[in-house]
Length: 334
Image (cartoon, rainbow, N blue to C red):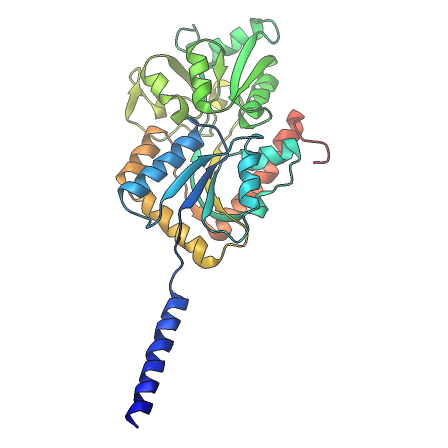
């Protein structure tokens, strides 16, 4: 009798333990690869490495978060890697506008719906930058110089062909009647260096990609491609804060553009796996290091998950298709 009771008790304990294990929230059991579909030094790279540092410093994951740059094919290398990792939740990717522009421009077999949406971390601004040694003090000075220059003599530096930087460049051409020579580089950090060296005449870099050169007195911001000025009022350089940079639209360049800084994971990720990463990034966003990073890069701090995030991404894909069609950047068949 006692043995029967003991067997029943052990069976009950075993069943409870098994049930507890089965219902336990998912978490990584090996290192997580954090893919950057862009080169080193740019906005996506800086954000991913900031996140890696925060996760490590605050012990937010039991497993390491390993940052890997896969910039080949305008980021297509990174997207195809994650697309081909269905069922592997130990892989996440930070996205920028090449989530839309790369497949539309190249025709590679990839669409954002091939991945699993996790969260929008922020939206990134675009600023029109010139070398501080140039005589342009505002957009009017810059546009007047464009109109007087021989077609193609003014060089615009950007990240990748037929990507967001060149989309904005084409919009400037249409607004002013000017014609640039567009020079693509692997990342926004390299673009800023080339502008400091006067190898290009202007750029449309993100704030985080050129703020160090602005602080150093090497670059000058002329306008921001947003519908309203940036919110940050702390002085950055030249006695100015980010909020003091006028909108391009108010200066006669009728173009607005904000870029996604979001996270996706592999196809076929489960709800528990997505929820783990959402919770992780909520913890990241709550740290003082993240708040400082948002301020230093003048980010729009919008955060989205779930259906709202997927709906926003779908609308943004349609907007990029229209912009790229107007610029003549769509690959045959798109």
